[in-house]
Length: 323
Image 1: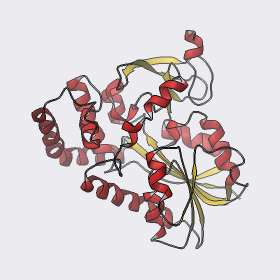
Image 2: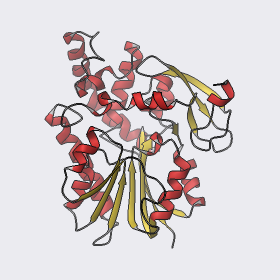
Image 3: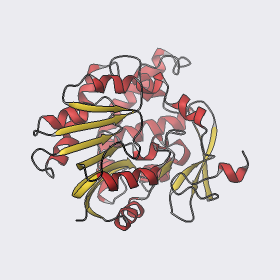
């Protein structure tokens, strides 16, 4: 692969782009974060190969156990956040709405939505442990694999959600085409993704947790993403930058990345990935967890301030399709 072929925008597929800074993934492979001069997306360069992407989504990513995290209190906490997302979406849904969650993971967001109304729920998740978990939930119609044209008729859904999924997609522009096609007029599209314009991103650059190379292929400034959706016929419904689920831990892990020189050690320890953290003693991991507990209250406050300025580490954006 030539340098020109490798440096291809993860969104619009145009070659080139301005190199911003280097980063490394959990395997030590080197990348750069570039910015496209055409669509203004930030993207990972060179573009990961199919084999690199396959390896990035191995069993260690999803977790070998029944849940992604072996600790019940972590999963219960995550379920509370999923319920919060379901509650926000429920405010905008008609009774009996048909909802599609793209990249539904273990299906617990859709399960939470069942508590709020009588909805027809659909999920899409790539083959693996997460899809197997989602398939066991009664009331969810699951498609294993990736979303493709023709999977659903046009104007089928009242809402389509992509929670921390969009930045993973290998064909994001095509995915937006499909979302536009399958949403009913007046339907809701909800996206959440890392905020590349956040204070965390600018502070930590290549060490930032939410870069997550090579799984995260591209990023958008929220204002630029809103413009892309506006051209496609979507009006903004709300933005939400504050996330207890994602942002304070992002600060903790990014600081540890900078100190340790290795990515996501604490996060992988929480997932039970013993192979990845084998070089760290029990004491070292205990100290990292203690730092997490001590620093979280401070970083909740700093994220609240950053979010007021539109600079929280992640963003959730909802749009309504024009009639």
